[in-house]
Each structure stands twice: as structure tokens, then as C-alpha cells.
Length: 408
Ligand SMILES: *Cc1c(COP(=O)(O)O)cnc(C)c1O
Image 1 (cartoon, rainbow, N blue to C red):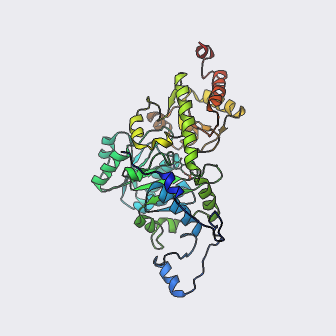
Image 2: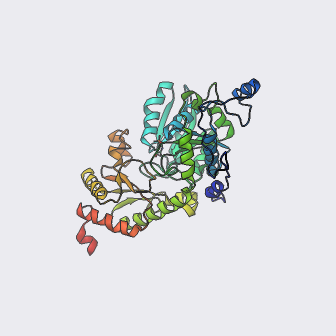
Image 3: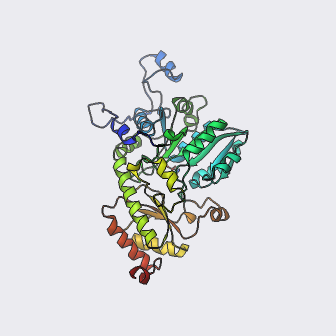
């Protein structure tokens, strides 16, 4: 289901002027705003005064610029930025669900989201059933009369399972549910709302900002839903207060301008490495590889210009080998042993002992998250062949690859 929708064109078409004609919009450096008349203040509180600002927990000019850019990128009516990805996820889900409600969620999701649904939301009487999101019949079987939301990631962390958003949105519509998709791993490549999702969330911390200098998040949805999040009486964003600072939204806005170029290079580099690693006999998971179980599904969802993304995993057999390899690669300046993703440099970590450590060991095993798994966020390296050769040397030195075999 391809569309003509191109997120990069939509971002390019935004035109913002700074207060003094600057080419970058001015940063709003105020928490509160004056009103020339008391009547306008009342209207603003009631949500009826277009272009008037109230208080920066509600909205600020800088945040509205980024909101608008994110809504343009995802093709939604509106958006609301948050201080972190978790700030966006938690307030969105708490806005959609309350006491007695039920969520059907993918079981392979970001560790923090998993912990929130498993350990935290039950306090509010919200129950979650975790399912294998690639098995549509299991998703449907988990729906009850209390279900309000289907939750998934376009490409899941860390196992890179792909959610069939078109199929999931059909089920969601049939049962009157909201399909909420975390699109953090695949900005530009996938536009979930164009495929039928109702709400899209990003951790801006990753590709969208791309410089690993801040956390941030966003919810992209209908005007009605975004207004409900910001409602002064019952809006989760307004009342819980995960507000992004104006300086940060201004800096993320500037980085967003190069996202399309970065995504192409991340995807190009990851595809090259995945193909080479697979050829060398390593157990490699990358949605761009034909061997990936959801390759076809993913290929049908993406805008091919931006490729299959920069995330891949390699199973090197054991945690010890994984640690040796990661330490050596860091020593040779091939990247950093660090969590997170979307940086200009390659980042690697062992998810079982880091980002997914919230998931109990037995559950990790069941979902195929093995000890020796290394998650790579492939960087923007200019010469990826050179990088591959250097990585391969590290793999041979740590016994991950057999030198004699690779030379044969
Ligand atoms: C990092 C991440 C989050 C959480 O975002 P923060 O900005 O760290 O709060 C949520 N979902 C995915 C897929 C992520 O990678």
C-alpha cells in the first residue's frame, strides 16, 4: 500500500521566519505570556483564542513549530511534543485508557514501555495482554470487550519484528479500537497513519534529533486527540507535565531538517553491513534482508527512498563474545558501547543485559532474545566498506568469525 506521501517534502515546505527575519524561528524564552485584555485570557483558558499562549506547560511558540513539523512528517492534523519518548507514550496511553480498560500490546517493545504496561498501569486498573504482534490471529483473539488500544512498534526493539500496520488497523477499526504505533525506529521510511494507524509516537531522542544530546518525544494524532491531551481540566500532558523546553525543541527542529539525508545513509550503511555479515555466516537480523521473516511486509510499507533503517542485530553466540567484540570495536573507534540509537556514529549494546533487562529472563528466551545478541545502530560512516573490513578484523580477533574460514 504505497502512497505519494513524502515526509521530507512536507518538512521542506514548512516556512518559518524568526522574529527579526532570522532564517531560524525565534526561541520563545518565556514560561508565561501577557494578555492585552482580560477577555482574551479567559478565551485562551477555554481553548478558544487562536495564536494566544497561556503558559508554557500547555504550549509555547517553539514547541508549536516542532509540533507542526512532526504532524507534517507523519501526515496527521496535529502533534504534541513531550520532554521524552516515555513522556509521550505514558501520557498518550493514560489519556486513552482508565480504570477497567484493556490494552493489547506487542510483547517485543521498548523496555520502558513494557515496564510501564506491565508494572505501572495496573495501579490505575489498566490491564495489558502481550502478544506476538506478527500473528494477527493472536492479536484479534486477545481483544476483549474492555479493550481500547492496540499498541505496537513499527519495527520492534530489539528483535526487529515488523508490525503489519495495514492488517492491524483493519482489526482495530472492526473492534472500534485505537491503533497506537511507536515509529521511533523508522521515521521517514514508514508513515503509520497513512497505513491506517490512529496515533503515532516517536522518541525524538533517536533518529529525529540524531545527535544524542537530548531526550524528547512526540504524539502525532487528530486535532481532537491532541487537544484532549492538552486540556487544562483532564489532559494527561497538561496535568502530568512532561513538557519539552523551548530551547530543546528549537534545537531538535534544526536537526530535523537533515533527517531525510541521514536516514538514507543509515539505511544504506546498515543494508551493506547486514548483507556482508550474513554472507560471512553470522546470524544477522535486518528487515532489509530477504531472510527476515517480515521482509515482504516491511517492503510493502516503506517509502523505498529511505530504505529499511539503520538498526540490525547480530547473534555472536554468547554474552562473553558479545562483550569482547563490543569492547574491541569501541577501542578501534568503530562506534560506542552505548544504548540508544540514531547517532552519527555506530552504537552497539547487548539488549538482554541493557535496554531489555526489564523483561524477565524466561520471557527474553521465549521471544528469542538470546545472550549473544548485539544490537547495532549503524552510523553515518562515509566509507562503509572500510568499516566492514575493520569490524571483520575485530570479529576474527575475538573468535566471533573463524579467520581460516573467511580466508578460504
Ligand atoms: C528510546 C525509545 C523510547 C523511549 O524514549 P525516551 O526518549 O528515552 O523516553 C520509546 N520507544 C522506543 C522504540 C525507543 O527506542
